[in-house]
Image (cartoon, rainbow, N blue to C red; front, side):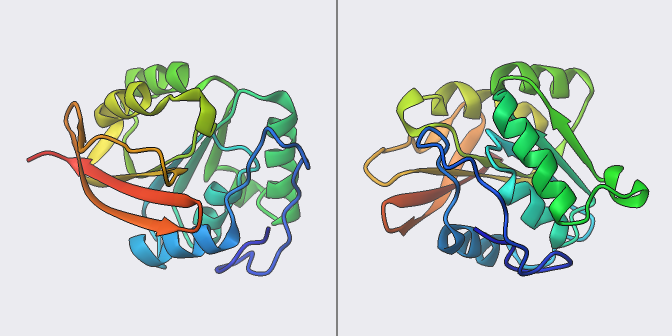
Length: 187
């Protein structure tokens, strides 16, 4: 697992080696960034169920102005901080660009909504077995920018709905056993 592009390109990221935490594969990450665009200058990015922090760190490396990592697992929180340090994102000028929320996903969405936070891109990668898609996606519509996207990584045999509340699906990309499903706000 490594940073693919940007200021931290080539940096190998740490992982827990824990079967419960399934890091996003490099080929899935590369496909994701090919779909959303390589340059994230000025974009805000939410890495929900952040795990190792790989997706949010990649977004920072590619120029995102703000990244929020959401992770409730304390070992993963330490890992995210370690990976940010390894990628030289702990300096005074870099630390203002990211935030680590040490909450579960649903509570963090409520907190972000109360703060009127809005995101251009939201990456959702819950534990495949926990079936948190519907409740997460329905709540996320409230913090998505009008022209923003929510991208969900899920097991390819898990069929997500065409719409969740105010969100509608507009494309899917299968990558081995994983699938990326893209959602935007209904007009």
